[in-house]
Image 1 (spheres, helix red, strand yellow):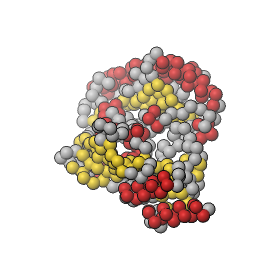
Image 2: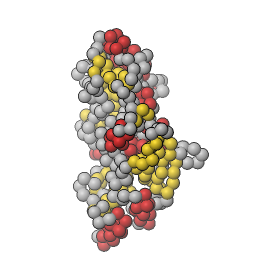
Image 3: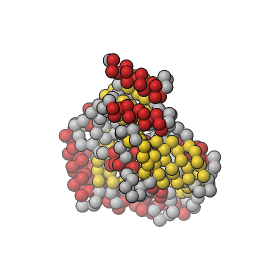
Image 4: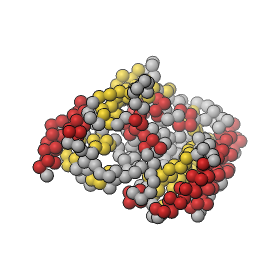
Length: 369
């Protein structure tokens, strides 16, 4: 207890009296409550916190909004959560150069709102509604816009970070600098490339009662200059495919599909189909092979499985009940991987209830997206 008090005093000196505290029930990682939480406001403070942690051999986990903190293999324990909430804001927004530097504790939504005032955007849309820039970049979290604009990492010119020892570093993806997935520490800021904000966004949505029909519609949409093609295939057979048009004409596809054009997205668009109580699988395969993969998953699971994601890229999430036994999850995964093997596909479990996640093979962060 005396050591904990001494560490807390040191963190208060670094972060301020209102921004260092003992861990509470909400400060858990992998089912383990952190002993301490620090909320530094500057790069120097991040460095000081990590130097202290290194000197005391503390296990540190960085936390943005915490939306993905329990994905992957559960943590074996955590001593200190470094909360990035005060590393917030943007600067050096050069409209003519279409670039901005942003602190990585900034929520993505806040960044987009600020950029929109100048007619620009970062062309990303992570499905985690509370995602911070740092959390998004740490795992390269992408949403529907990945179809046209690829992953968030594609729009990064440079990141600054503090490593586990508390030393400052930067990465521009060149030479010996580490890639985003290789950074062992806390990303503190990022220089990002921007795109013009589209003047009009319209969605065309058509029913797709089977994975085969969804694949057919996705292939048709791919010929129409779209920004994203998503599918939602619930387990009741009432599936749909939706295509997003940004400053391009949606009406030829709408006519072919006998569908209406809407200025608003479907309610499920850009949202994960699972919750913290479910088992979430990530499937990745060529779009032409997605239907066969979904059928193979249903066969292995003994019935239809909800699937949602990018029909245009063949990257989707599937949902199994969180009450499923660990050995059954493994059998399902093995069966799907067998089908994917000949198709150069990939299947992993990205999230599951913690007790179950401790018993099964889980994805590593670079496999989340």
